[in-house]
Length: 219
Image 1: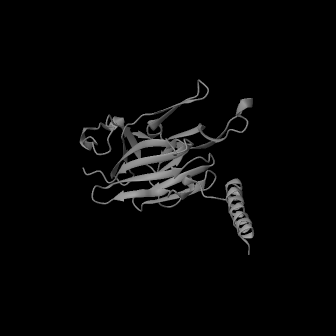
Image 2: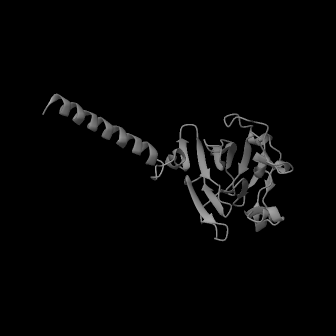
Image 3: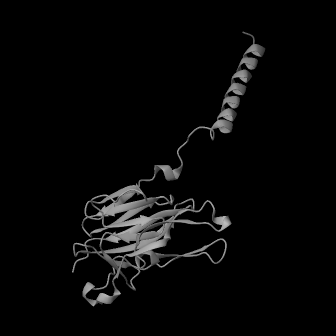
């Protein structure tokens, strides 16, 4: 092989490599590369048995689902709004709405999950039980521009649901976290502290709920 032939062969190889690299850059978005959010773990993503604290991460973007949270078993069960609730659960999340399984909730002034007030100092009248609603649990907003919103009839807890205020009087709506710790008295008489620390994922998509908890609260 002459020197000229070697140079031509070398240039041909370089051009082929550059072409392959360019093609990879062009077509890499076509394939199903996992997004960062898809790699995240949902449910009880952190549990500290030493302090009884933890973090729950829920994809509540679907308006047709309830996410049932079992603090005892550290499990999250997702069901359609039309399905019956699971046998074991303590509170549930629908988008930003919340309900309890026969419990009651009081709003505290604390903003730190480790600074829960003494349970004995919270008056009984501060605890709010669930209420039946027919115009709170939104399940279909596809006709919203025509003034039609479809709701599901269900219970919800108006106190715990205050952890995020959604002001729809302006467009786009204004979302405001209360930042407060909510004292949740479970149906079995035990207590938990709950705080919604975020309602978006890293891409700022709303409906991804990050809940910090302390359970059980020592009396």
